[in-house]
Image (cartoon, rainbow, N blue to C red; front, side):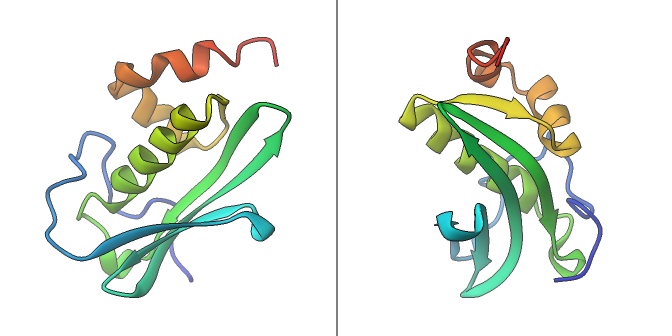
Amino acid sequence: MTGTPHSDDHPDHHPDETSDDIELRDVPDESRYDLYVDGVRVGFMDYQLRGDTFTALHTEIDPAYGGRGLASRLVTEVLDNVRDTGMALRPLCPFVRVFLERHPEYDDLVTASKGT
C-alpha cells in the first residue's frame, strides 16, 4: 500500500459515519492490525507488544479511501481491543497521539502506561 500516513482522515471524525462492510483483523505474526473495506485491505496500524504494553507505531490509510473516517475507525477499534486485554498504551504514532488528545475517554490507557 502506498500513501501518506493516515491520509485525509481527521481524528475528530466519528467512525460510524460510513456504511461499508468494515473489518479489523489482527495479524500478530506481523505485529499489525489490518483494516478491510468490502474485503479490500485499505489501511493498517503497526504495533509492538512488550510485556503488558501495546505500542502504536504507525497508522496508514490508502489515499483512495481518505476522508471517510477510516483511520479514526481503525484507531478506535484497536484502542478498544487494547482496553479489553487490560494492556497499557504507548502512543508513538502521531495520528494516535492527536486522536487521544481529542478523545479523553481513552486517557486511562495512556495513564496506565506511564513509566514503562
